[in-house]
Image (cartoon, rainbow, N blue to C red; front, side):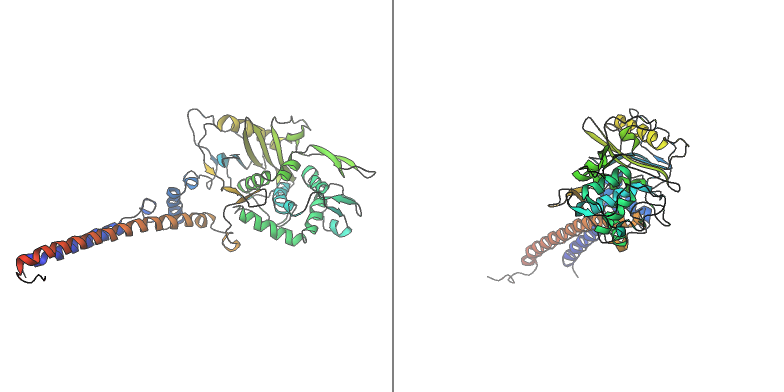
Length: 415
């Protein structure tokens, strides 16, 4: 066969090699061929700026040093986190995903779940059944059987007095204790909280019940997007019932950092959110404060110093540090993006993953969608490039062949 007859074959072969080479070139996220959880997370880092700065899965204090940013204060809490609410940037944290009993800070999840379901002016007469099941030793708002209360009164009992009687009453209105626990678990998953297992709607010590500083921060942030939640979380004192009457009595918020009590000075700019204590959980606190247009959320779980006010003073120190560091601090992670739910008047999570995939392998499940999307993107670009190369090669080959034919076989060209 002549040399000329081999030329089209060489051209097509070269085009094919180029196409295969393009298809074989991996995108940046998959350059090393991820296989394990760590590799999936590394791949997701490239595709997702949130994951790119995430250092929250490890143990110990997480902070990105910078010359102009002071280090976080040394506090005794087993777990804590400092977050800028507007941006979702986690400025620093310690063992953010460590599962710990949450005590009454879990009532923030209860409120996020149940509070939007009833009008604040709705009246409910408390029954004996509503108050059944309240555990001995629980904090109580002081609700009385057969007395009518507005829903707003019940929420004052939840937020100010951490009243399990108010929680049980609202849970009964919601369809019952077990249904409310299921609703709370679903809400936790929808908010991106993977460390929380709900066993008691009021946060009372119950085997198998856990949350984390990360998840409690999610609950506090979601709650503060609801004006009613924000109002109750920042109320210092009121009457129960609020409208007064012969059975009314005054109640004060037990959050010492908000009201200033028991030797704790009130924190300038504090807007709530919720404190808690049980013998098993120790002291827990979600605290939000606003200064100069910036709102910070600090979650503190189980200080070990032995001081009776440790949870409040350590939250104070972390808030002070956060306001100083926030303008220049680099994030060590970020909360999931919230968007305003249509017609709801409150923020909702962007995506809800089915409950069946939530309990285990949180990091791998969270990273995988980003990896898949990134891989598909680069595969499409590579395939499109390969098709373009093949098309151009085929066109060039055809033109070359048509030019060669008259020279090699005269008279074969038709009119």
